[in-house]
View (cartoon, rainbow, N blue to C red):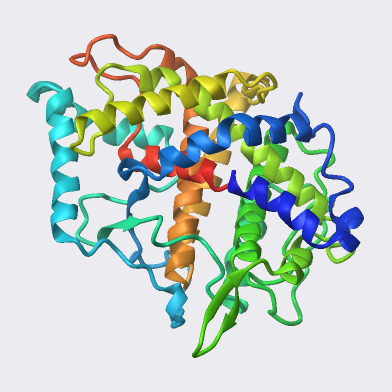
Length: 417
């Protein structure tokens, strides 16, 4: 949600292009009973500050991730050698051991031995069936804790054919296309931070589910590009390194005249992404209300305060008056709807695997976090019955689960828009 503030700031920065870039980023959103202005007011006046406070807490600032997986689709010839592409993992061994201890203790505290053993058997099947994205094995020696506050998402210098290949693969091979499409604009040069222009398709004639899928990917892409434009390395000299807003970069992605009219649509798709993740937070409230759920960091008083802040935030999300209605999706013939849902789940699962092909480690970190956050949101939205059927006792088999990794990614992904 930081990006909604940055959008408003950049709007003030380059007034000559204001009409071109933002004249269409108002009013109702397609396929939604909501409008841009209501989202802005709700986010800026009620939700933003609470969420930022929560994300600065230890539970949400540390994310465990494997950045060393091989790309499963093509050979990555080299990794970005620029210093800003590097990720600084947690080097404090005592902190890492502490985090591992409290996670293990949390599991021991919440479940009996019999339940814990059964969970190991249940989770593999249940999670694979519900998940929309690949989740790193937290027990892998290649997985490391990363402090997200010390590794912010920003422009690292990673660009060119390799960066363009990532998004081209996502759009060309994983987005559902109508019969009549606009081909991707193959860049003549690779001057922008993530490969200049990318594929865009006409969405007329597509079912609402496929339109929604494309708009989520487009919104995710817009989110990333705004971060890169807003936190751009403007000066890298022996004397100083200055980060700031790169208006030219922003305009390359969102100015209507420079994007064949696509820029405003991309910004509107960011609002659509926000709505989907906001709805998921509201739907997930019963899971977090379970007495057995705790935000373990080993500081009982802080943990309780942060859980209450989380619950207050989710109650606030639930109070939003114009939520996206996910029941409008997959509402037709049950057999066809089930197949379409599985097709979309597998397509997003594939996109999450593409994140392991990103050559810049910091870009890979935030790409994996944002795709996992969105994948977790989709998992929540389409597990409504399981969430409603959560057991009252911790000794019963839970019908729905979220790992710490999924929780951290969901809140941080939402907080980045």
